[in-house]
Image (cartoon, rainbow, N blue to C red; front, side, top):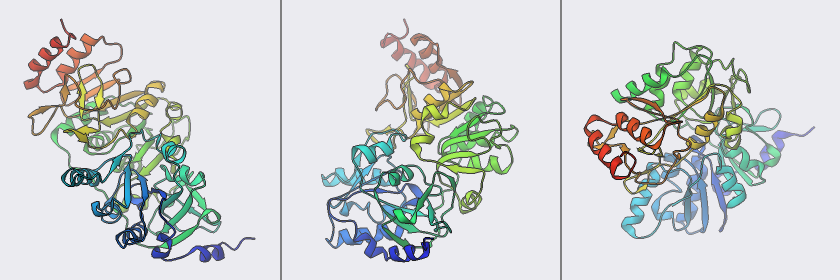
Length: 440
């Protein structure tokens, strides 16, 4: 019988010693969101600052404070190069610093969330994974917990595993386990996890949430994106019955519905009785609710976001937000003011999965305006790349209503979308539609 404690002791080391294993030329995957390991990242940043390591490429999604204050500092990006598959505030700051200094400090890789493991494993061929895990169990297994996302598939690829064990990190069932025998180095760092509260809801969020909630039937399986708008949808669903969850992100709104018994996953065709997700973000109370809770299972995002898997459940409802919708029905959900603002994430994955589900609905929503009502989000032509093509878009919702674009002609789409715009922009949008030959 293997002595797992002895194997653990052999691999246990300090953050500085573990970071020293990351040498020049390393292609490193860094955990997503709250799984980004603060002690390891600080030690790696300290080595780079001291000139002890360089030429390290860091691949990741959704950076948090612990990364932004260490390995993603602009002054280190000539040695520790950030390759982001999902931009946030930290990357937008790095891009601005790059423009000011005339030297690139962050590199963006276009990719759907489902494709992220393939990008890391098969395209750029990462050789190291650095991430946070839950403590080892009696069988010698750690858990990637609330961050199976790309950690699980990268770990399965044979990459070197450098783990930061945190006793506050949730343990989750599903496909999240990694064995002590697969691990190169272990660092212990028991610190509170980063928490994310609910975004403040605007009146438009509540109006959109009510419209979308009316479209969700009992027994539906839900996918919700991040932010105030999906939270508003969840807040309007407490009178529903037997809802299910199959989502990339486990949100506070979905957890509240589970705690209320509205979500019980009883009508799902696959993973019946289980809430399926790839990663989670929320408060300590929500992490505690997920921890060792048999109602939750986490899997790699290459599985969770596979449209062929999503569509196996009936009445899948996918709810995501966008930044712009053009009069053809295409959506740009990632580009704003001439720069990469976020990324495509799993939007198109779930649009296609919900569309292929029996009785499914894919819903993309946005406020009708931005910049305090001075800019229309319904536009003649997009300002950036297409996140969800017009051929895939089904329902579009603003606070002014909802329209199913499937089966509508170009002219019918344009006229319907103009009615979803704020009234002060409708006349100019109609003129644009005529200029483009969409309306005669």
